[in-house]
Image (cartoon, rainbow, N blue to C red; front, side, top):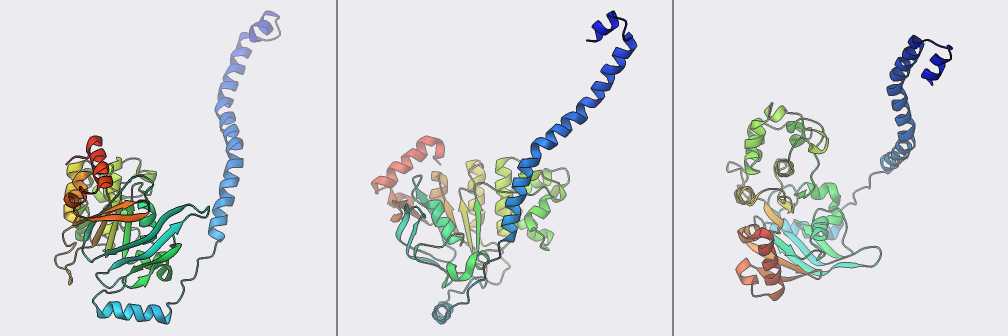
Length: 337
């Protein structure tokens, strides 16, 4: 167009150059304006969803019934203290869970975890391992039966009450765009020596000290500046800082190499604080997919068809056909110790 206008004598070459320069200056602002108009509908929908979540009132925690109080008193009398007051016993009594569409996941599940016990939960995909973890964490209520922590039902305690005693670390961890320290403490005042002990137990002290500013290093949103294994180790350290009576690891070391994982699990099996009055280590429930992890446990639970099909040591369960087949699959997949 510019050549045609210049050839006809309507404009000069300088006019064409000036017009091209003007359009090049306007390009970026126009692209930004177009992007804003494109994102605006999606942002409005997202904001509506966030407002909907914030508008939901917090469910009031029901007061314990007289029966629950009696059970709690009995638990205290037998040495099984309630949540937040030391070691606790975890019990699944005739627990069942089904989705709203009627699909049964767990049925008539019986389980008891003793204080300080290290237990590996093993089962094929879809056997109900993650559902069992969600029930223990109080994230979902059982359809049938009762899950008790220190003699109190999770439905009575509510998610916040369960969190006093149970710390759950999932495979997918979340870190905020903040310092390593802030991601570990989540706003609480924690002494540096306590932070160091938790990081050491999670085998995270080495890489944290190597960061440019140590604990005060900023990490990206969702921890994108760290590797998957580093994020998982920070999540474990964050859970340990809560001094839980029960620590649940739902495939929380999947991105960590077996040697580091063995070190983490060995550290977790020691008392978290030798100077603490109780000196007790937390009860440890690990959803395991590596033979090295399974062998470290005091007891292995084989979950099959929504029920505990077998319980014992790894060597004892090798006599169970279904478990032996699963162990061979883990070995072929590289999970051999």
